[in-house]
Length: 347
Length: 260
Image 1 (cartoon, chains in turn green, red):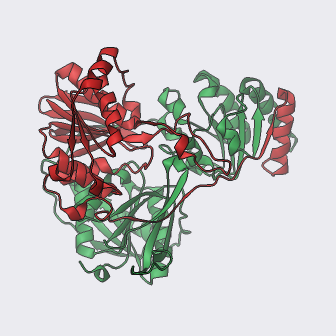
Image 2 (cartoon, rainbow over the protein chains, first blue to last red):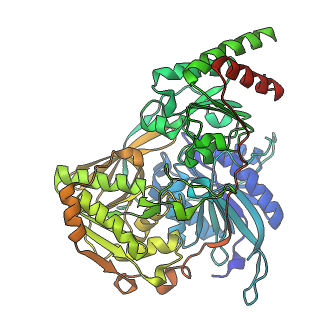
Image 3 (spheres, chains in turn purple, yellow):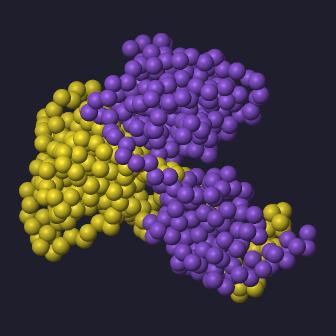
């Protein structure tokens, strides 16, 4: 395999129910800056059924080209036909870099595709750069230039590793949602749209979808919230989240939670902050009754201001909190909500 | 029915996390455990065994001391334990690890392979799907419920805002979420038997259909350029006041930072 044959930055433009996922636009934004460093273009790969109409939107957000793989077999996400679609695009177009969102879809699809085409895949990246590998020259070892340097947290966020894939192409990464910035929408900006269908023949690897059950939720996506009021096991019961709801209402905030709360069945999974939930970086993060396991910290420690209320003064959450209050949330929250109501009314 | 469960020995990060004075992780002070998602996968296999009758084989790749998690799994009810260990397998990334495990599993008969979704040290969630790709069988990731129906498996597969009920013909690989179940405890009799049980130990020579160029550090497409323990930004202020004073303190800070 000649590595020089591989050109261009490609991103998987994830869509669900024919709506483009936020991560797709974030990847185009990041892909564009990597492409600028390499003097190349960013191509979005749009996979689904009846999705061609979404291509213009990807262009408006910065994609130079959109490859559309459109087939009835691709209506709902399934590992095999989607893996076949991406692997076929890679074999046909030979991209130098291929980025996928680290979503419940991308973290299933990425490994299957990378195994099929025999390349490396770096999971859950939070930073991507173009640079040299090795970072500094090492005697007796070729230093390669213009490599994708993929930085990711490991060990529940306690270790940071930068990884390269110098001898295989494409260099593949899954990227955590909410970390990269999408570009401003540019009305009328068009991408070159190309259709590509490798053919889909069901085999033993195709699974059958018996039912699709959508979670009923009318809440704001916690990744978009400016202020989060987040509760942990210390809140005590699902009913007691009322205290958090009341505080959130006064502040125009959104309620989120820790993994323990989801495991206990008090709150749905889409409100979970942390390593196995969502990464958030709001202006203010209230950690209420959250002890602060490192998996939780990994999902929220980039918040601008962290306010923690916990009755255990040794709770690890105080190690990252800007303002830590040792005390009983049951006593503090109602008073805080009342006081803020007065403050807000006075404005 | 024959079920193979892949498990991994990982450092314990829950509760026992120890930091050095500079805010980095003190690895030497941490214990090892069976990876939580893998334990849920094992429990799922044992429940299928209880319900339908099955032979459950646990397999791990690691250092010789990883034998401990195999014995723990056997004390919970697994029938056989296989340790894949060899110097040439060291330094493997997910590609080389999945090649190794697939090469070992090719020696076994199986209807179902269950892995945890991800291990708490690497958090990649890649090895399960990659094993399935090497073996040419379907994969269902993020399983929150597993049932058997004839020669098929019915699985609830979790997504961000929904779940799919999927049906796949066996053999099939499933990756399990820790939320799947509450793993059982080892039984005293099980511990007694597991201590004496034979563990099968395999090395490079036992791997089927795997090239040397796909194993260990040399067979890993990804290479580490730099690794460092993350230094946290550090604690801010911590106060211990009565409730009314606490509220004044918070409101004061929110005003100071122009939040309100």
